[in-house]
Image 1: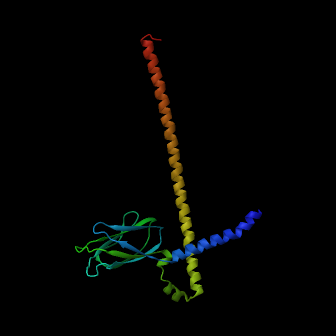
Image 2: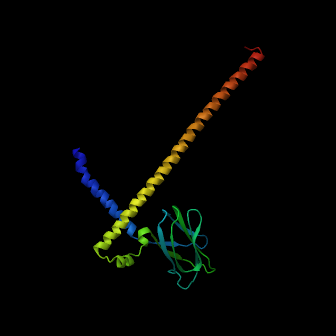
Image 3: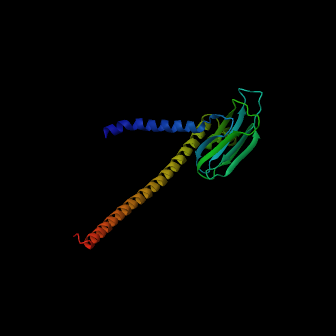
Length: 218
């Protein structure tokens, strides 16, 4: 009991630090750079829960060859293959939607102009959930600022973490159910296979016994 009491504060601090770190990660939105090939597509995917706001801005960069002016095509699809955003002959753009189904959302980019150029890259700023919120508008609407605003952000982040934990728990339960069903089916298949082998062996012995008796060998 003494050892448990001694480690409890450390465990509490570790959990608190993990929650704060996760909250900071949720509040931050980092841009992703994608180097587009001369042909083919470059895709990024993100596993998102349902009823989550997604906001993304993308822009074509011309670092290596500023004189070239290629354009790109963009297609965003849901886990069930529904097209959520489709844009062609674009250099910049934005897509925003609220997820209606949980799973991997896919955003694909490719060069669709005759002028391919080289060294072409995409700057993709993908924001999900609380990171997609306009906190300036929220602060003005609720008349909060400073520490109160930061606490409001952390509160929303903790709620998002809690919802994500519930989602992961549900997914784990689904996977466990599938695993148990699979194990049960494998067990029944093994029993059936063993039963078939036993029956076949008995039939072979019966056939051999009848053959030997017919030949008067036994």
